[in-house]
Image 1 (cartoon, rainbow, N blue to C red):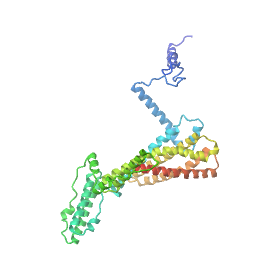
Image 2 (cartoon, rainbow, N blue to C red):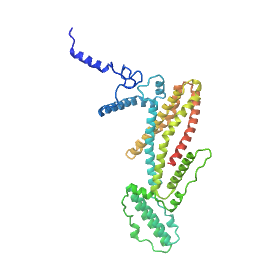
Image 3 (cartoon, helix red, strand yellow):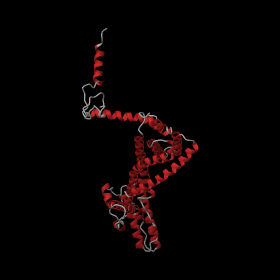
Image 4 (cartoon, rainbow, N blue to C red):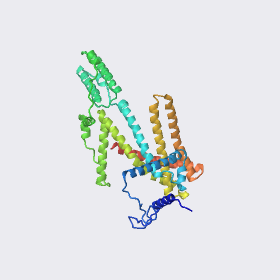
Length: 418
C-alpha cells in the first residue's frame, strides 16, 4: 500500500515538536523528557522571547483568568459553600484560587468605596462643610459702624478666597454673589440702626470680582501659609511620646503620628477651606490605604476562630483558612455590588425616579443576603445541626466583629495620622 508523503511530513513535524531526545536541562544538565525538567522543574522554554510572543502569552493568561471568573463569581455569590466544597474535593482548575480571588475583590471593593467616599466628601465640602462659609453674626452684633464695615470686609474676603481656590462649581460661584449681596444688605441695616450712612445701593448689587484660577501648585503653596492662630497652633511641637518599655525608634514613630494627628485636626477645624479639604482627602486616603492590610491580618484570625469553635471536627487549619478566604471574598463582592448599585442609583435617580427605588431594594437584598449566605455556608461545610450551627455562627460573629471594630479603629487612627 502506498503511503501519503504529506502525512509522513506532518507526522515528522509533530514528532519533532514533541520529542526532546538529546536535550538537556540548562540548569542541572539532566536529560529532558518533557517541557519541564524532572530533576529541578525548570522549563525548557527560554524567558528571552520576542515582544509579540510575550503579548500572546499575556493575552492567553488574561483570557484564561476571564474564563475562570465566569465559573467562579456566580457560585461565589449565589451558592453558599459551593466553591469551598469543590476545592476540598480536588476540583480546583476551573476556579480562581481562594487567596487571589479574595485579594482582587478586596482591592476592587476598597477602590470603589474610596470613590464613593471621595464623592460624598466633595459634596460635604461644597455644601455641608463648606468651601463657601458665610457668618453674618459678627455684622449683626457689631457695636459701631467701624466694626460693621470690618466684619463685612472679612466675610467678603473669605468669599473671594473661596472663589480663588478654583474648586467651586458654577452654581457655587453664583451662590457667592448672592451671599455677598445678602451680607451687604445686612450691613446696611445694621449701619442704619447705629445711625450711620448705609452702604450704597450700587455696592449692594455689585457682584464679587471675577478671579483667575490659580495653578494647583500655587494654591497648595498659598494654603500652607496659615493665619496667625493657625501658625501658633501648628507651630507648637506635640508632646513627645515616652513609653519606658518601648524602643526609642517606636517612641519616635508614635510622636510623629501624634504630630500628624494634631496637624490634621488643626487643618480640619481651621478657617482655611482649601487646607480643610486637603486634610480630609489626606485622612480618607490614609484610612483606605490601611484597611486592606488590616483585613489581611483578620482573615487568618477568623480561621483561628473557626478552628477553635470546630476543634472536634478534626479539620486542618488550612481548611478553615480556605473557608475564611471564600467568606471574605463573598463579603467583598457583596460590598462591591452594594457600592456600585448606590452609585448607579445616584446617577439614574434624576432621570428616572423608579430606578432609585429599584436600586434601593437591590441594596437591601444584598445586605440581608450577607448573613444568610454565611450561615448557610457554615452549615453546609461543617455539617452540624441547625441549632448548633446558629449558636456557633452567633458566637463567631460577635468575636469577629469585636476584632473588626478594633482593627477599624486602628485603621482610622493611622488614617488620621497620615
